[in-house]
Structures are given as C-alpha cells and as structure tokens.
Image (cartoon, rainbow, N blue to C red; front, top):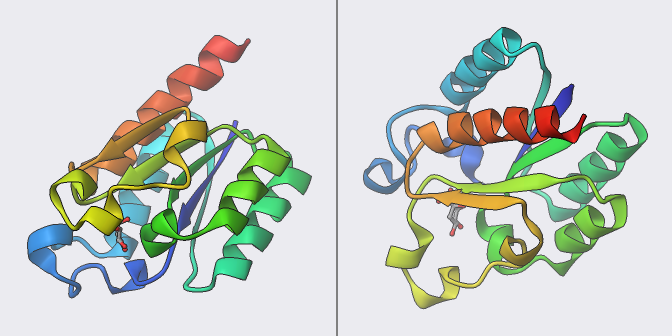
Length: 147
Ligand code: DQA
C-alpha cells in the first residue's frame, strides 16, 4: 500500500530543537528508518515536511488524487490551530494516525486540545521518534484488516 507521512512546522529543526522534548534524532534520521521499515513491510512511503499550513492541505489533496491508502501525520503546532488541515482529512476520508514526539498532555494547556484526535484512527504521543515506527506498524495492521 501507499502511506504518506506529513510533518508540520519546525519539525525540520529536529535534532537541534529542544532535544530534551523532541530527542536527538533529525527528521532525516526518522525518514531513513521509516523508509527502511516500510520497505520491509512492502509499503511505499512518501515523506514530507512543510512549515506552511496551505502546503499541508495541498499535500493531503495530492495524496487523495494519488490514491494514497493511509496518512501518518505530526501536524506539530497546527495540531492546536488548524481547522483547514482537519477539513482536508475529513474531505478526502484518508484514514490517519496522529503522532507527537512529546507527551502533549504533560505540557502547556494549549497543547491539550487537538483538532485531529477525534477523527484519527489513533493517536501516539510521548514516545519520541519510536512513535512514527509504531504508527507505521499500526497502519500496516489496519490496512491488512481492510481486505
Ligand atoms: C509536537 C507537539 C506540538 O504541540 C508542537 O507544537 C510541535 C511538535 C510533537 O511532536 O510533540 O511542534 O507535535
């Protein structure tokens, strides 16, 4: 199957950005590991990061037109603000898992509301880069059960 991974603003700075919260791995490290795992599971992985809300909306539309089967998304700060990205996921009906590196529930109160969690297949947070790998495994299982 085809799986798209979407990363929101500032995640291009992983590795240097607040490593106590977000870990030492760069986004390139995460991408590399995920591509490896996806290959082992026979999936095609598209990996993106963008700092602009409208570009993430466009990427979701593109995923729809490309018949992408599943999305793994870390909307980053847009988690707490973006009706537009939520609407894109609702419009395209592509099933998705929401991932956060940090445990958003242990942080500021404004991080405890997500525009995505109620429409996600599942949510993973607080497990660092491992969260992306767990999301890929879960996506694999959900897609296998679909048939
Ligand atoms: C984040 C959590 C968000 O609250 C924050 O704005 C981010 C990263 C995470 O992965 O922990 O940019 O999504």
